[in-house]
Image 1 (cartoon, one colour):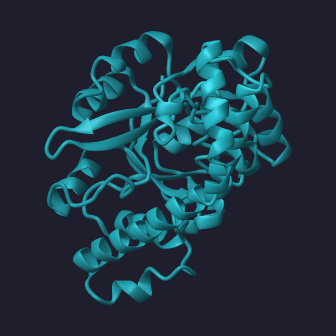
Image 2 (tube, rainbow, N blue to C red; image 1 turned 45 degrees about the horizontal axis):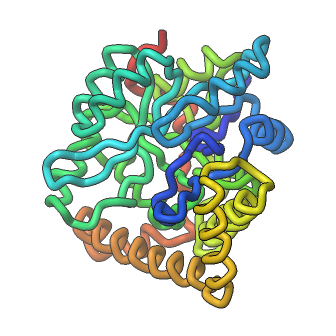
Image 3 (cartoon, one colour; image 1 turned 180 degrees about the vertical axis):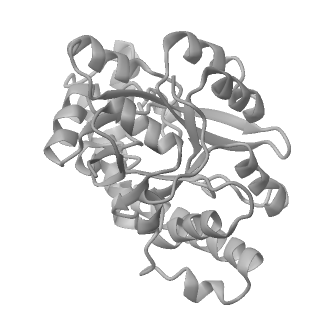
Length: 328
């Protein structure tokens, strides 16, 4: 059986709005699509997928530069809201088009409206990093009801802790109802992690690969996340941001504002331990959130079952097909 690999969660410079450096006008990523393609291929990816935040420009740029390529997947990470509790939810969608992208932008206030439009278009999509934004805004069971509306879930995210990914895998393995596809992606915001977490599925070309994952015949593989992994990305983005202010990158700001941000960057140099400190705090919160959810779902024994050494990618996923939506 011929299989293919793709990192199904990668950002480029077209993820323009940073969630942490918004007031400084920083992008969320500064990687060029061509560089992402080159690195992904060098790391053994058969297909290259771009999933920028609420944009398909990175994937379209790759297709424009490589018009004869049949190994590019135009994806998108769509930022939505769960109206009950106003929880932020991210969907990874694969095989996006410009008309479909425009349609979903108007629907992002309600994740169920986005899901309905993606299903109508026959595009495969998944729920990304399950507990990343969940902080008990609604009862856990109600939140996990989202899984009844999606054909797949990101079971291995390259920035999430191993126990977070293990919990995602265990939820998929034990939930009642149709079996969902389990995919993996690095969630890379710098080139250093592109292609280090991936999805493997049967196929000899892009269409066969997408058809396989839409049927759940796939498995995630590669690295998990940690404090050092996420902090490394943060420092990489900060470095690229400062370089852009100095003229070695995209010019996103007016001259006077660029000068002001450069001055701020220089004055804040003694505080450059902050990205590491913030990352450590967030990972500690993630660990607590995963432990609470695991205990609530599976009891106190879940602590051992969700140990960091547990694999989050059962081999059987390549052998037993599951439900999905058709890929057109």
